[in-house]
Amino acid sequence: MNTELITAVAIGIGLAASAGFRVFVPMLVAAIAAKTGILPLNESFQWVSSWTAIAILGTATVVEILAYYIPVVDNLLDTISTPLAIGAGTLLLTSVLPIDSEMMRWITGAAIGGGSAAVVQSGSALTRLTSTKLTAGIGNPVVATIENVAATGTSILSLIIPFFILALFLLLTILIFTGVRRRLRRRAVMTADKTK
Figure 1 (cartoon, rainbow, N blue to C red):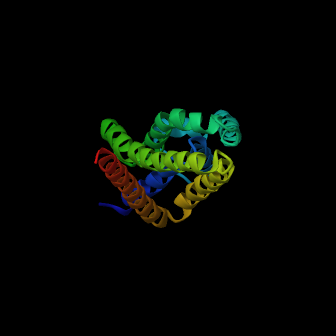
Figure 2: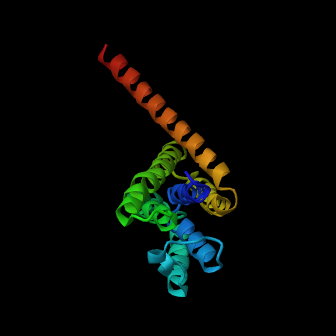
């Protein structure tokens, strides 16, 4: 495996995972990075670095960030954001993969990029749901702020130190799966206790 491919995969996974926090933040970061020549995009994705795309993504980013501070809307957005995050994660990884086969590029982008975004989005949605239950929604703006910072930080760091962000994403994935498994076990124990 060559270094260019490994680096592209690490950058793509970092950006895709960031889409799990916020759909449009990593897309805007990628568009600006491509415009400035920092992020090389595949030929069919050059449109991402256009001024039109940057303006649209910038507007969508501001709207998305502000919407997460509106009570009730934040939980509704998690439902809508999941398929959007998977699409954004797929697009972000596919756009940077230096693979000749268009079909293989999209399959890899969907499986790894979309999957990465889905994992982070699931963890994000569970965190907000827990915050809503524990604080009656009062703590949700804090969760939203942390997610905004995480989306921006991981998107930028994916371009600078992609392998660190990849390792961080793998750790986050393990933590999310461990938390979900623990929650399912607790629920099973509570159900068993009720039936006794």
